[in-house]
Amino acid sequence: MEYDVIIVGVGGMGSAAAWQLARRGQKVLGLERYDIPHANGSSHGVSRIIRLPYYEDPAYVPLLHRAMELWREAEAASGRELMVTTGSIDAGPEDDPLFQGALASARLHDLTHEILTGAQVNERFPGYNLPAAHRALLQPQGGLIASERAIVAHVELAQSLGAAINAREAVIRWETDPGGEGVTVVTHKGSYRGKKLVLTAGAWMAELAPELARLAVPERQVLAWLQPHRPEWFGPRRFPVFNLQVAEGRYYGLPIYDVPGFKFGRYHHRNETGAADSLAREPDAEDEFLLRAFAERYFPAGAGATMALRACMFTNTPDEHFILDRHPRHPQVILASPCSGHGYKFCSVIGEILADLATGDGAASQDIGFLRLNRAGLAGHDKYLDMTPVS
Image: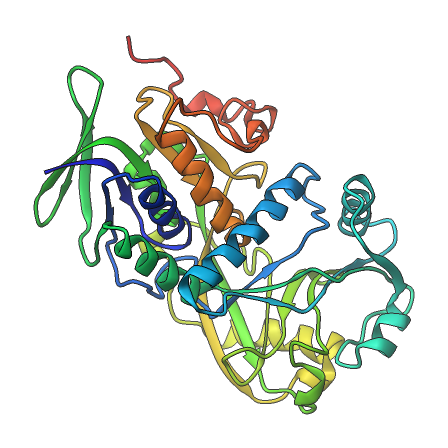
């Protein structure tokens, strides 16, 4: 059997792409080396933040608006709660790039927002204990995505439209046809032919596309859930998701949701990088100590007993922006590495973009020029990437 599109990696991005492609009448095969969903990659851990005033680059904001629309579409189609609005806080010293970047994005895109001092945040949201002089941007539309539930919803929606999704089937290799038109994907169970191939393998991207070995680097990340002393302060109605720059680093957090504890983590947790399968899966005492010290200082009412510690993975690019593009030598192969620790919220819209790239004239419905391989942010690093097109 030949498929229109084969997707390798059915996590956040791959599951969304499967639904979007199936909606367009494409014959889709999704291949996942683990379970659906699973706890070995980057999309587990119950919830992920979604926030609009994007300090990383204002160019993400139109993508976020579309992502929110598509999350609501998936909710309506699946009957599952996938996005919960809590509001979002981006905070830090007034001159810090995090606060200033969020403010610039909010102003450029005319986003509803308030500017508060740390003291005002603490008064309004008593679970917080920010430095009084910090500045915070409060935006009411932010919240959380139920990440694993969303993967299940996207997979079930794709299956209801005829997509084939195979779990526990690891891909060994892929190769393009001699004529340059299609692809063959070989797994430990068999081989499949497709017209197009979409690679959404997260931390395993470089194993499937070695050209990305120095452009998509896995990093171990650990998340904590602590049971608050005052749980009524940490529910979705009273605890906005946060993105916080403090002396100890940059941290992020979410309210209590499906696990009895508020969730948080530190970006680039302990700076542990390496091949995906070489990174430690089990959190240890040092992980817990690092995270608990942050909570005790900035969220003391939340720093009760540990409820859970879970490891996941970032996949970092040199400029910490995503990679969304065709393979430089095989145009029928599409690369998607939404990564560097801030990709999940975009799953819904990236699924749509991947469907755009794999069908029709291949033009993306959104502006993704700043996410393509030939961007300035990868200059000096793209020497590792063979950009010579196939003749």
